[in-house]
Length: 181
View 1 (cartoon, helix red, strand yellow):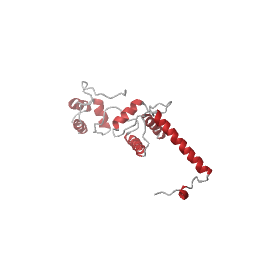
View 2 (cartoon, helix red, strand yellow):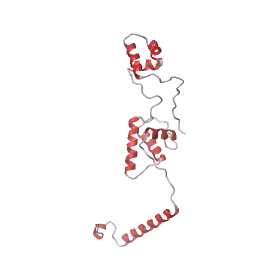
View 3 (cartoon, rainbow, N blue to C red):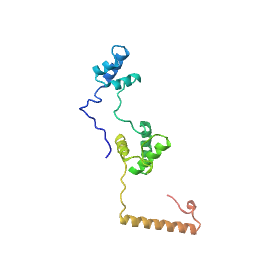
View 4 (tube, rainbow, N blue to C red):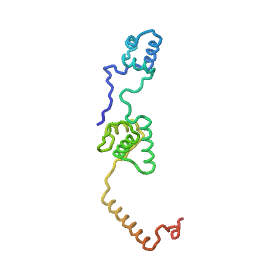
């Protein structure tokens, strides 16, 4: 099961708003109060206010770590998956985990994926699917005995056809002997 962030409501962490952050930063910039007093009045953690003030950033942003690949790279990965699916090649969960690992390696993105199996982690995969709800991955299913036997007969037919075409020197000359439509 992936590690899912569950907000702790009792702690009051992240309960400040972007409006109060802007007001606190404005108060500190105008010299009306110190960072410490602004953090107390506007109920913003002192270190958060200090960091946002120094970087001149008045946006709240999401809590917790950001995506390992970054939003733009994840969007490229989503586009690649959709392209593969549109061409009739649906991907399994293992396929996407492998693609994500090689994607991070090629772009020299620092990651915590497993280098021995060369796959992204299961937790990362579950969170990626939550961040990209428009992606549907297939579950591989077993092939029944009857279907397997039918595929073997079809394979035998095409092997025989290839042998006949090769024996009669017709391979690659289908336009001369077969009428379409």
